[in-house]
Image (cartoon, rainbow, N blue to C red; front, side, top):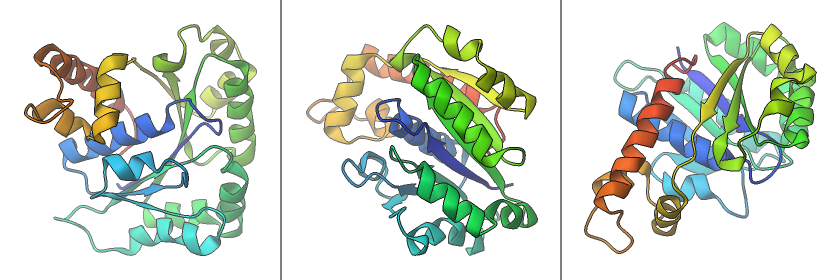
Length: 235
């Protein structure tokens, strides 16, 4: 089954684009065709790193957002229906929820056999807890919720673990995974080169190429992240 993945968290700096890029590389390595959409007008980091797969989209208009659902009308690729990754910028929850509601999107995609996943990238702060509660209250039962504890944005998730918001999400069948922190120096080099994770691991002859042990650490990070992604309803 194809999936529609809204990579959110509503606030800036929680690692949404890192997660979108990770999921893109996971789909590539697993042979799952997909289309990506980048809603961040200022950084467009998803588009920069995976330009062959992602394009910008304007969330302020239904015409822009309709492009996301239109992917599921496209013919299969090698017998596989495309999935979709949407890298949500901060403060996009309101226009997105209006579009989902007015289009009755969840019912339509259920009829088409598309799995809808709302990803909530969380740091260790209270804001992430409150925003998770708002997400659950907005969409309720129906879609899947994937809560990502991003260790690159904090290490003590006690507030989230003990929250009523997480209990509510778990009661709806939410998945909770942990994303380890990739070494900061390696991530900086990858970002400076606008490199995909594949390119970061396999390129050795250009400026800012990762060293042997840096490449090994990226491989190890990807392996651990893929083990968590394998448990999710992605394809």
